[in-house]
Amino acid sequence: MDVDFLIIGQGLAGSLLAWELIQRGCKVIIVDNGKENASQIAAGLINPITGMRFVKTADVDVLLPATKRCYSDLATFFQQVFYIEKPMLRLFRSPQELQNSLKRLNQPGYQDYINEVHPTEATLSNITTPFGYLQQNQTGYLLTQPLLSRLKTFFIEKNCYRTADFNHRDIQLNPLRWQDISARQIVFCEGYQARENPWFSWLPFQLVKGEILTLQHSTDLPDNIINYGNWLIPLNNQQIRIGATFDRKTLDTLTTESGKRHLLNEVKQVSASLTQSTVIKHQANIRPCTLDKQPFLGYHPRHKQLAIFNGFGAKGSLQIPWYSQQFANALLNNTPIPANIQRYYESYFTA
Image (cartoon, rainbow, N blue to C red; front, side, top):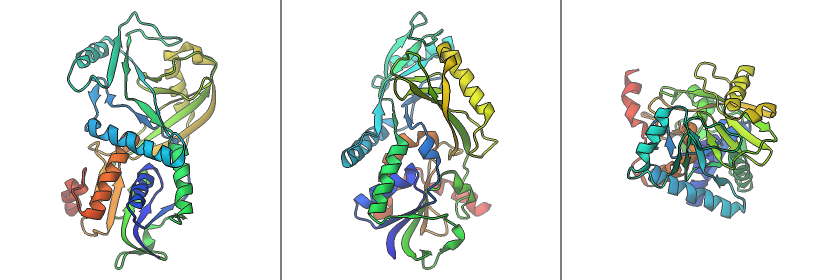
C-alpha cells in the first residue's frame, strides 16, 4: 500500500495532524496500539494567562483563534461539542499575586483575557478566598477523550487506521517502508514514548508524570474552572475533575496513593465542603514536555523522510491545532517550520 504519510500515534497531536492532512486530500495511515495515552486523560485546559506573574502565553493571540476554529469545525462535522468555553476563577495564594494581577489588569494585550479582580473581602460559594481572586476569560477545556474517540472511528471508516504495537526496527529507510506500507514520510507523534525512538530520543524532552482524580460530591460550587495552583473542572452538578500532580522522577503510568492524598488535601484547603467527596476515577500518564518549553517539529537531520510532531506538554489543547496547520503546510509546500528542531541539530552532530 502506498500512502503520503504514515503517522505514528493517535494522541491529540497525531489525530489533528492526520485530520489536517486528510482535509487537504492526502492519503494517510495512523498506527496506534489502542491503549490509553496522555491525551485521553488530560484535562484539556486552555488558559491564556498563567504563572504567579500572570504572563500571557506566547503567541496566544494567534493560537487561540486557530484553536477555536478547529474545534468548532470538528463539532460541526461530527455534530458534537468538544470544546467547553468556561471562565476561570484564579484564586490568589498570596498578597503578591493580587498585586501582580492588578498590574496586568490595565496593560495592553491583557484586557481580552482578564475580566475583574476581586479583592480579599470577596467571597465565593463554598470556596475559600483569603487573598481574593481573579476572573479570567477565554478559558475552557477540551473533551479530549470523546474527540479522539470520534476521530478514531472516522479514521477507521476511511481505512486510515491500523492497530499495532509499533516497533521502530520494522522501519525500512530506503525505500521508506513499514510492514506492507510504503510512505513518502513517516511522522512520529508518540508522546512520551519518543524517548525510545532511535531517531529522535536525542531531543531534550523533560517528561512529567501527572495524576488526576474525578470526584463525586454534593457541594454547591461555582460553575467555573477554578485554579488554585492545581485546577478544578466542574463536569456537572455532582462531578468534578481535579489535578494535577507534577513528578519528574517516577516516569510511569501507575496511580499512587501519595498522588491521590496530595490532590485531595490541596482541594480540601480550597473547599472544606469537599471533604466528603468520593473518588470515582484515578488516572495517571506522562506529559511530553520539553526543556525549552517549545514543541518539537521538523525532520531528522540525516533522514529527511522521518519527521517528528511532539512535545506539546500541558498546552497541547491550545497549541496543536495551529501547529498542525503550519506543519501540514511545511510537509506539503516546504514552508518554514515553527519550533523547528533544527535548533538542536548541533547537539545531535556533536553527541
